Image (cartoon, rainbow, N blue to C red; front, top):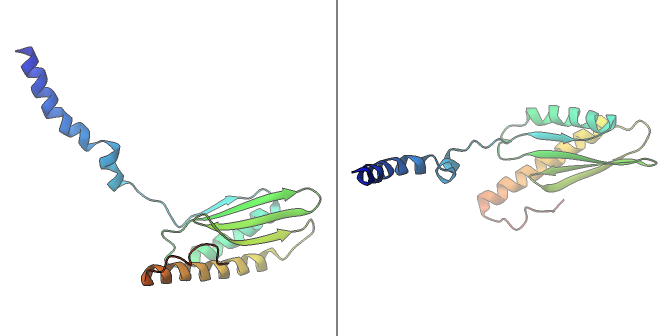
Length: 136
């Protein structure tokens, strides 16, 4: 009698366990997008990230896109800041050791980002995905 009860228990519980499996939960996952991920190191990079993210917050329809700011520091020469949208590099700039026009650089970067987002959306509508990488 015990094997029959165990078999029934397994038959009843297995479907419930499968419903909570990672494969079934993949459809219910929450995707976070529209973020600016700041991986900068210096004051220039942090200021650029501040200005850029304030412009980014004002943009509509940024869901599905994440922006990452990277910074490489060269001790004698300054820093190189790279901006990527969903892993595609669209903007690179150099900040020297002295004061630079950071706000103007952020404005230029947001304009290039707007152009890139418009191009990606236009390519998605027309079905032309061949021009979505490294055109800038």
